[in-house]
Image (cartoon, rainbow, N blue to C red; front, side, top):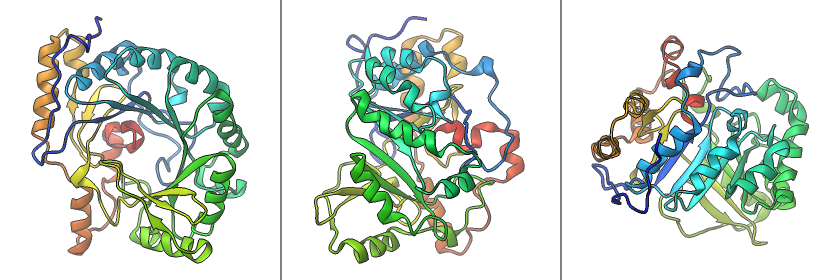
Length: 355
C-alpha cells in the first residue's frame, strides 16, 4: 500500500454543518484492554473485533494521511489499551513522516508504560496521558478488578525518565467513590510534574451502570478544591480543547472536562477511527462509516478523501447536548445503549472507539 504524500496532496480544512473544522483524530489501535474498569468495561468477556479486520500500521498511517489532507493536525492513539498493540513505535514512526501531523499523543492506563516509554519517545511520540482514578491501591483494585496499581505508578515515573514533558493524568470523578481524593490527586500531580484533568462521569454505554447520582459536577469539584486551596482562577479557553483549565494560588494548573453537565459539542473538532477502520463523527454516534473496505479494495486517494470530506461536511452530531436535553425533559432513563445491542455490535462499546 502506498501512503499519500501530504506535501503534494490537496489540503483543505473541512467544516461540518455547524462550521466545526476537522482538526483532531482519535485513532484506536486495538479494542483489547488489560483492565476491566467499571465505568468503561464492566464485563469480563466481550465480543472482540476480528483480528483479520484490524488495520495494519501502514493502513492506519494511510488513513491518517487522508484526514490530514482535510485539516487534521492532531492525532491521539487510543484503545482499548493502545500499549497492547504490537510494535506501536512503528506506527508512531510512520505518523511522524506526515508533516501535517503537529501533535501525536497517547492515552494509556500505564500498566505497560514503563517497558515502552523510551521506545515511544525515540519513535517520536510527543505527549502521554495516563488514566489514574485513585491513589489508593484497594480502590484501584475495586474499580479495575486487577491488581496493577504498582505497575501504573512505575509507568507514570517512567514518563519523565524517557524524556517526555507535559504529562497529563486523567481522572474520572465519581461521586461516592473518589470524590475525597481530588486534592490528593492534584498534589500527586505536582510531585510527578503532571497536570491533572478531572472528567465528569459520562453515560457512554449500556453496561457501565451510569447514573446521574454518580456524576460529580464541575461546580461540585470546584467547591471541594476551593475549600482546600482558596481562590481558583479560570484560565483562558484554548479553542476546541475539551478541558476547562484552572489556576491554583501557587501557580499549579488543572483541568476539568465537564462533558455531562456542560457539553462542548459547539466546538468539537474530533472524530474517531476504530482499530478496524470504522469512522465515527461523535463519541455518542451509533452508526459510522466503514473506511477499511474501500481502503482494502484499492479505492483511489481522491475517492477516499471525498468520502471523508462528505462525511464530515454532512456532520450534524451534538451527542452530549442531545443527552443533556433528554435529562432536562425528564426522558433520560437507563444507559445510552442496551447491553444486548452492545453484544451484537462491538463498535458500540466505547473501548472500541477510543473513548
